[in-house]
Image 1 (spheres, rainbow, N blue to C red):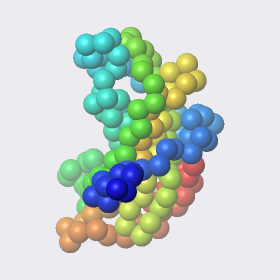
Image 2: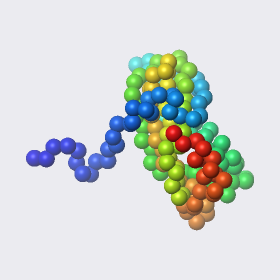
Image 3: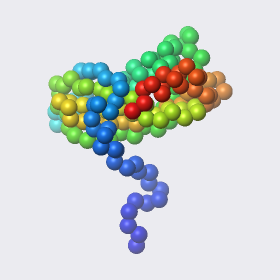
Length: 155
């Protein structure tokens, strides 16, 4: 009998150790965890950690695509097609987390936002999200000005 995961299972490798350092990322901020982010064990739950990654991504998206969340002005939309999260250690509540993010890859119509959440310099969670740029007809090429901003934020 063959060992290992079924060919029907999708898995990802462990992240590069450099991702565990805030120095790897070009953009940094701090975010306070909410009481409602805590689970029954007194730790921040996995859904809450993904929400913190999402907030970090959205902030970066606004920096690169200023009208992305202005529904009246936006002609392009950003949608997530794949989200991979690594939960590396528990984080208590209350906590103020350091967020770090950069661009892991830029393609023709998509890019990968790579973020980390840190508590006392220890990495709590990593996330890589494939984001696709859409117009009314579907995936659309990333404009040159946005591509330059993405390139400037690479890991």
